[in-house]
Image 1 (tube, rainbow, N blue to C red):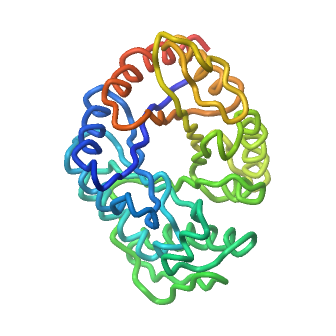
Image 2: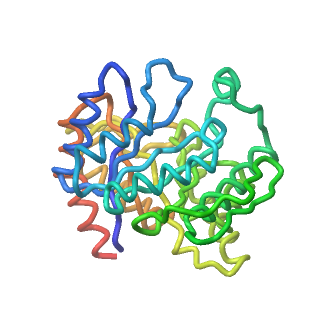
Length: 297
């Protein structure tokens, strides 16, 4: 089993040099991905897409993605253009995570639409269709939807590689959408979706994929892993909304279980603060131990 590993970084405006240091450390340590959180209504956060551009410029090998881009505040037409541009500038190192926005009150306060339930789901489905259509050069983009309509623009530019559209969502119908149309699932933190609910969610994605003739294995599954790596075991067997606090071997055991028993293939570490030492511990001790366990499967 070939797993991928990365870290998630909040784009705190007062700590932008630290953000770049974390991205460089992730690359230097051989990780695969850097996620930049996108909450534009958070006064402490800089613009996630500007930060992504800086992270791509400061690195040369690691891939970067918004985890996840706030679709209500970033229209699909512009998201498609921005994603292709990032990918071209970085020689194929950009992936696109999208979602309907974790905090509806913040979206509305910033001038975004008030969408719930079916409207929010339709917006995500239409966004996926529009973004993919924009990447097909030489074709007119014409998508007439309930929440978004794009008519008559020419597709392009094409990205440097096939960008994955990874959906950050947790509702049952959103999981169905992932299975039927998206390239991956960015699972929410355990405080949003408890550990015990991750396997049923992945099984629902699998069923939705099979229902439309897709191979569930083609859909990436990204697990968010908050906590700290130390020699002291506090939550070595997390349940509910617990973070993980334990030794590298305990972390590797949890990752092995998430891969073998729950269905995840990508593991995004959420370290406490801007702690390069924690990134190094994850990359130097947890990742090799987890890879060794998964090679045995």
